[in-house]
Image (cartoon, rainbow, N blue to C red; front, side, top):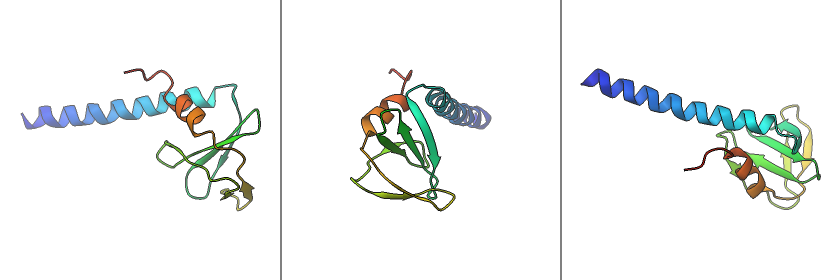
Length: 99
C-alpha cells in the first residue's frame, strides 16, 4: 500500500512537470514573442513583437508589471517595462491546458 502511494505521488509530480515543460516549449516556439530576457530574480521578461512586455516569475506564472518598472537582467542591465501583457502571457503559458 505504501509503495502504491509513493508511485502515485511520483507520477503526479512528473505529470505536473511535463505540462509545464510543454507549455514552455509552446511559448518558446511561438512567433508572437520577439525576445526573452532572463531576469536576476530568476524570472523571464517576454517582449512581444508589438513592443509590449510581460513578466514570468521563477515558478512559471505570469505576474503583474507596474508602469515604468525597472527590471534587472542576469547580466546586470536595467530594462524599463513597457506595457503589462499579463493576460496575453497567461493565455500563452496555459495554451493547450483546457480543463
